[in-house]
Image (cartoon, one colour):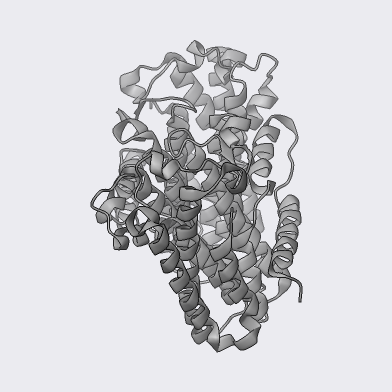
Length: 296
Length: 296
């Protein structure tokens, strides 16, 4: 079996090629919008969310083409959220994955519109006939994607994060809930989409739900650890930002060692959820280690 | 029969009540996001798009509840587009319908997120089981809404509009195409959604497509006329902005009289498309006159 890293890269390449076909170039004056959308969605990235859709769906026997398409829809939502989160009125970041952010490479108006149009594209892609032959499955995916990205999911989490970056009274429960919404909801939905496309049993779905929940939290804890100790050349973005902004993170609450310990504990728990699937879940298990040990 | 104005107001009230139920209030730190979404979507407005969905759908025998729900989804897209268009990096408007715009009443980050979350809400509402019993009909509506709001529709039109407000070389064809995307696509889809929910014949759909196309253009020409000659207290927003910005409009190309003449011509043509439906289309005919003669 190819190494996890090789499988992740193979999946990322396939997603990029598929997105390249789905996000058409444009002629005429609107070409700038299409260009900014492609800059954001096709640029470097691990494509971890579509990878989860592909891995969970393959494990459960879903059709490859539909998995790839659903993964592309999810990646469009992720790409739009990064564009908007980087805006001056939000996190005000100039660099993302080692490149100028969209509002720097283009301008602020183009960045706002490119994010908006990527969100529309996500739903158009998910609703399309190639995602799954049964309309009811596609509809469930559209609804799930809307919930994961909306006010009770990603956008709601980002709102909480913007409101009070210092949050002195915050405890681990408040912080967990924030990240469960801000990043966890879309990561969970990525796994769920694979299961939905395979029309998996509710037992399988519940197990994957537990797995995805823990994986999302590990992802965020490691993000906080990387920010606290990382080098910009490794992380590909500004680091030590949280501390400079006096922001509450898993590291400020638990300390570096405590946060590492928490992530390791969650990793063990995430793998336990996969017992149901035996060795067919090895790739999802490897993904836990990858997220835990990632350096960018 | 009640006057057109009374019917429009009755429909607007029903849409506002339905939106109030669909856009839930929230507790906790994300309450601010829900509040901004509700401020934008439930504030004063003609709700002309949902009115078109209701009117076209009722004419063709669609179920009332589904029409109202689809109309609410469309109004969420419209509300999100107004929030983002008003942002400082876009049209930089402080007043909308006589009230502070969302980034003034709240702040810029909240406005960006409220627009984003309203777009997600639109798709969640449209995909929901209450829209239509057949999943394939709901899916077609989701796809249509995504196309109307995305890069080849509303967002693409706004991009063109932002790029070069003066556009010296513009002719009427370029301007028509811009507005066909920026405002026409969603107006057309509003009518189309009513026909789709009624599972109307393709003859009926084509007739309504022609009607909606012309209605959208009339709407924009009248917008340009109101901006050129309106008073802020009537229009409920900043006026004479186009001229101050040296912007190309139907009025700068055709003159006030020429633009009025063009709108009247389109109005006659829009009504001709409705001949197929006989007197059952009276309300859609009245809507043409309303859009033509509106003062705000």
